[in-house]
Length: 88
Image 1 (cartoon, rainbow, N blue to C red):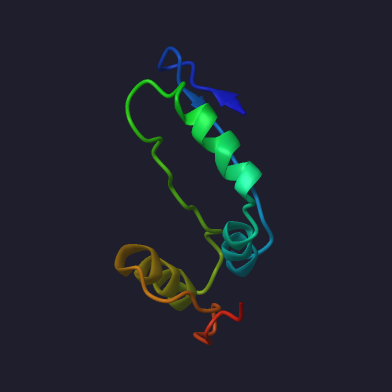
Image 2: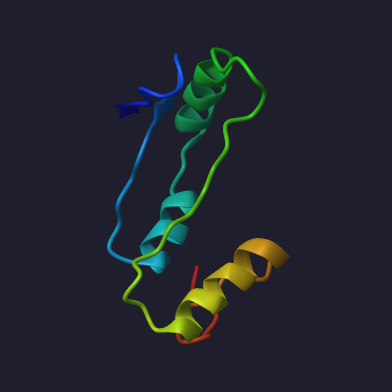
């Protein structure tokens, strides 16, 4: 958790995972108890829904970054970086 010294009251939470696939799997593993807690915490957010951004390592092959970007922007079915469907 980081506090933004340039904007009073703004906190930034960062998660690092080994792969995009692991990130997608984290979303699948959210329990009902997790959801209840997230909803409770969200009530403390002052200006609507928190902004979520995804950053990937700059040294990834350009094609991989573009594939991830398309999935985020177009709500495509999740795939691995190689383009194979994500197994559930």
